[in-house]
Image (cartoon, rainbow, N blue to C red; front, top):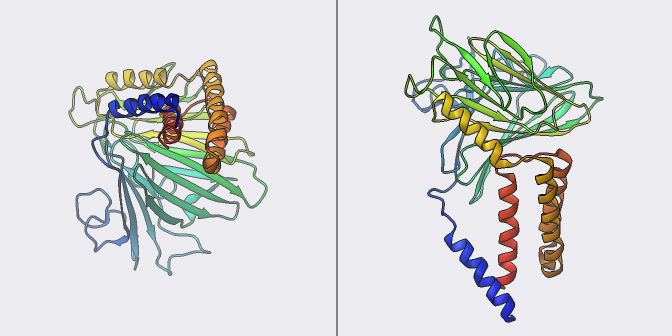
Length: 373
């Protein structure tokens, strides 16, 4: 090793030594399918029996997966009835009133069915998914795969070490000609506040704030949505919290909101040729409405999603990859994977939260490994 490599290697090592360390490790819990006789089967973590029952069912179940990146815990709950007497042409009978029976808890999103994917108008509501999960030192993943007549549909939920949000990637593998691709998200921001309790649901974007009773279509300068309730505000009622959703504007063809004064519905329409799209989900933001709005605007600024910044980063990363390829022949496969990732970002035209920092860190780690070898 020459003196230049030694000095540079020591410098990079020093950089990593002074970086802030995370306070907790990534954890994943998946106990498989639970019935109404199992403890905590309702997915809310408060014990009791399964709160989604199907009348006369012999087998009502929930699959509960918790993902904790060290910052908070996300619970994904899939509710279903597999009673053979209730199945019709392979479809499940027990389902959410608004979509697929996949719930997200805690904090704003519907715990008994917060999203749906509809290919050619067919809801995931009608079919049972294959479910799996896995964990590494820095990530935890929950995967759901539906086989429908129109397409194979995959949902991948991922958390990364010490980040306070949930990544969602959707993949569509067509079986027939695709005429439409849509997704739907359902939330009850601030608090569920059921029955006759007073509510005042609202949403905010990077460009505007909108009251309930409105139906709107978002513009390309609105890459995120903050959902909140003016009455159920943490500033007035401790324990209440808004939720939020990031999305790459270049992926979606249209984004529409139906801001009702109970549930708030968000609809995404995608080009029929698109087979992958992404979201970043914030749950239970521990801030008042005004603090959460400032928080979201700051996150947008931090991500620096301007075209100039993105182009500069792509050029910078490709230059680093070119230099590394000459030095890390044994690592060629991972470098190819990184090159594909950078190309996807270039085509997408925007960053997901934390994505730029993640690639910067990966390249720094590979450079470090070269210099200390």
